[in-house]
Image (cartoon, rainbow, N blue to C red):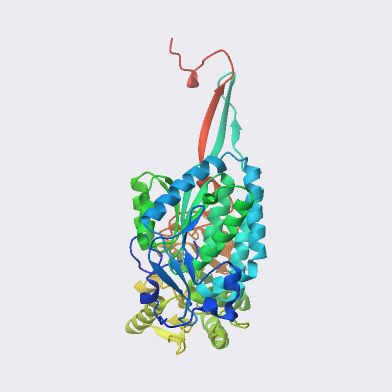
Length: 542
C-alpha cells in the first residue's frame, strides 16, 4: 500500500462498503448531482453519467439496486450506480473464464504490450482520474493524481516484467535428464479493493496479474464505485482496440453478497482483499475452506521510533505527513510516535507547532493549497469521536485537535494524544483517522519491543544516525513488520518493492519484487531425453 489504502471500518462479512445514503447520508434526494455541475465537467470527460452501470463483462449492465456515490467534502451526491447482483457476478466469472482461454495463449511480451497501452491511456487521463479520486474518496488532489500515477508506474514495471519473469533449470542427478521449473498463469484473479486507495490497489494487482496471463474480476469499495467504473472504461477501450475480450478485466460493483460469492467461488483462483483485519480474517477462512489462494492486505498500527541522535527537523517533517496525510486514512499512516526521553519535549513542541499550521489548510481536496481533506464518511467521523471520548476517559491528554469541524462534509481536526501507556488498548487498536499517540521511551531497544507488541505488522520506521541502531532495527530482533524504514516515514512505499505486512496485517505481498509469483502456479518438470529410466536417489526396482 498501500491494499492499501485501505478500508478499516467494521463492516458486514466481505463488505468493503456502507449503504451510501444511510451511513454517509448528508445528501438530499433533491440535491443536484455534482456530475451536472460544470465545475466537475471532468466526470463526463471520463465517460460517467448521472446513472452508471456498475457491471462489466464485455458489456455494461447492472440488475441490482441503484445507489448513490456521495462526495465526502460536502455530502452531496456525485452520481448514481446501478449495482450488480449475484447473477451479474456469475456472468462476469463465466466471461472471465472464457476470456482467459484467449488471454493466456498470448505470449507474455504481447500481454505486456497491452498493459503498456493501458498505462498510456491512464497517462492521458491522469488529471481527470486524479480529480475523481479526490472527489469521491476525499484525498487532496496531489495525492489523487499521485495514486493514478502509481497505477501508471506499475504498468511500466509490469511491461518490463513481461520479458523477465523466468523459470529455472537445475542440475539433475540422473543422466540424460533435465530438471526445470516453469511458471504458468492461474486463471481468474478476484480483487476486492478498499475506499482509501480506490485505484492504486487494483492497479498493483491487475497490471501484474495481466502480464502473468490471468484475467481479473474487480469488486470495488461500495463508496468509490465511480472510480472503478471510469477506470474500467479506460481499460475496456484498450482491450477493444486490440480485438481482445473485455472480460479480461471485468467489474462487478455490488453489496457484500458479491464479495461473499467471490470468497466461496473455486473459479476465483486467487482473491486479493484489502480491508479490515476483522473482515480479512473471515475472507481468509472462506477461501482456505476451498483450498484457494488469498492475498490479504489488512490493518496497520504503524510506529515511528525517534532515537536520541535523530535529525529532529527531518523527524517533524516526516511525521507530519505520515500522521495527517490522507486525513489519517492510509494503511501506512503513523499511529504511534515513540520518542526517546531526551528528545520527547522538543519533538512534541515542534510537532504541535506544525499541526497548528496545517489546521488552517484543511478543506476541499480539489482546491489549491489544501493539505488535509475530509474523512471518507459519517462512520469514520463517529469512530473518531468515540476514540477521542475514550482517550479522555482513560486519562489521555489531547495535545492538539480532538474536535469535529463545524462545516459541510466529514472534516475532523488532526489530533495528537499523550499520557497513555504503550500497552493501552486504544494505542493497540487502529482508529482509521488522523490520531497519533505519542509515547516516551528510555531506549531504542525498549522502543523496538513496543513497536512489535501490537498485533498488526505493516509499516515501521526509525530515525537515527547510528549504524548500530539501524542494523539492530533491520535485523532478526528488530522490527517485525513487512515494511522496515530508516529515516523516512511509515507511508509512501515505492512500487519496486513488495508491499504488505506480517501478523494480523495478513502476510500478503503486492506490487514489486517477486510478488508476481502469487499470480502464477509453479511446475517442477523433469524431462528424460535418454533411452534409460533411472530412479532418483539411486533406487533400484528390478
